[in-house]
Figure (cartoon, rainbow, N blue to C red):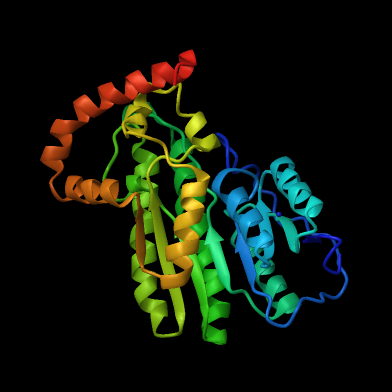
Length: 308
């Protein structure tokens, strides 16, 4: 785990989960010298998008941030932004699919700082495609990264947090994890797993002083959204009135997730309600899917032509 020099001396694109090399690359560092009450947050997916935004926001607010991602280049760019501002942070290349690397990283965080206040599981993967056209590898990638990788991280952090009697785990799912979305069915299924797991674990860990929040946003303007533009299967992703921004997500995290620690947050609320209704009444959702897909395809075409 490489540390920024100002303390005592790590988003996402298609297939960004990377190789399965174990042992996350972390350079040796000096004995940490953080202020006694400085909080420590660990964030996955910090190379771009929501993960990058949250990492820099928390670091700016005085949190010591452990930034992680499998995308070494993107992670280095995030670290350079933080270093330029003299923020307090570490960076670690982490493939979240590897359980032992999760355990090693969480252990190292506690050995260095004696605490981990919040874990943000942000990293994710998406490859649009219909059921009959998707490969076995597509299945593995979606569930290994979006579900299993997140679960490994949650388990590793929870073991330590339960012993400490405190902590907060924030898992990112999606509105696609609230209702089934055709065209991105594997992503939707994997995010259903994230949501279901997080809501169950929230009940298990609450009695130990550890909170779990699952965040389910609508489409967010990030590299993951960009890669879906050319896939007509992903038309429903583009059916909303507007895309959320990373600033929108940041606002909800700061004003609601970290302060109130709810079990679930849907962003935006009205789309979340509609999505839950669609899940409760799938026949109605199927009737609306055609018109919404048509709207989404028009939006995709406009974006590709530069008119959006």
